Image 1 (cartoon, rainbow over the protein chains, first blue to last red):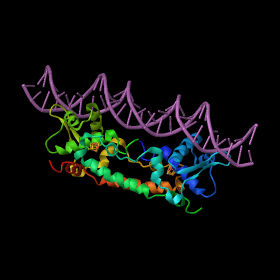
Image 2 (cartoon, rainbow over the protein chains, first blue to last red):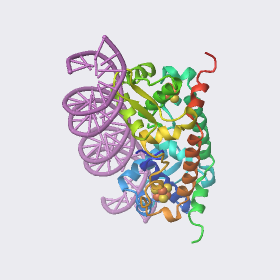
Image 3 (cartoon, each protein chain N blue to C red):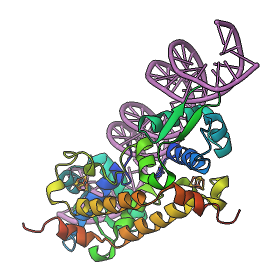
Image 4 (tube, rainbow over the protein chains, first blue to last red):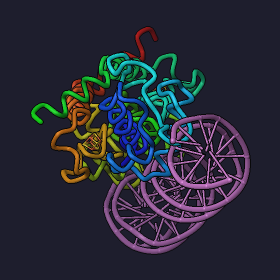
Length: 140
Length: 140
DNA sequence: CATATATAAGACTTACAAAGTCTTATATAT
DNA sequence: ATATATAAGACTTTGTAAGTCTTATATATG
Ligand code: SF4
Ligand code: SF4
């Protein structure tokens, strides 16, 4: 089995939610976030690099440094995080590469799956980090 | 990249649609179906075996033998085919194994992803082979 | 009955991508 | 100056999908 959201993506998501939790209190060190979220430190570093490259987080080097969100948690969608780490969501190969399949001109499956892909992407677009944060800490 | 519907699953789907096309005219040999749908023959054999084990197709051995659908095309869903070949659709690991993650009791992401998983499964449940067949041959 | 044609079953190999580790360089607070 | 942090990317390991091969078995038909 392979999941739609992969392990590294889930890790990255945890890290992002962690940053969201401390948003506004200065940068969070990767070591601290990784420890808190149960993510292997070295992996967390790589994930943060990717998130940084896509501008989802800002970095500050040196002691007291670390990462902080690039925007307000309400302005970062789940889809952005997912696609930054694992690339575009794809239901079937023919929906990404234009020439993946000779049959695509009259394939009923493709039509339906494209519809599903559109829905999934839209669903993930509508979920933001702050929603995830609040949803998970209803009663602390 | 990994697609939600994997290559073998797509192959199996083509084969099933092929059987649907000739449904009612006696069995179709794997060799014929595989050739028509551009599926490597040996792989097609393995896929047909899986489909047979899950009762989606009936087999008849010997010359003039082959496979035919176990039920009417309108009674076989896309989800059945997909899950027969690649196992249950999973959005995230924690949605299949109950103890996959220690955080699941208060995780906002999990709640949302469960919702999505439900939608996706339901979507695939509602698509049947005959829909795929007609959808793809609108104007022949 | 002999034979050609088909499925049945599963071991085995290959190919590829995800996950994880390691190393070196660089910036900065104190 | 030094300790602490990120930056970047090569490298290794692991796991699963995809594909191949082999042997056994059932049956239509001459
Ligand atoms: S057969 Fe249809 S669904 Fe499958 S890859 Fe080709 S176009 Fe896409
Ligand atoms: S952190 Fe949440 S979404 Fe991720 S595996 Fe754990 S419960 Fe599931």
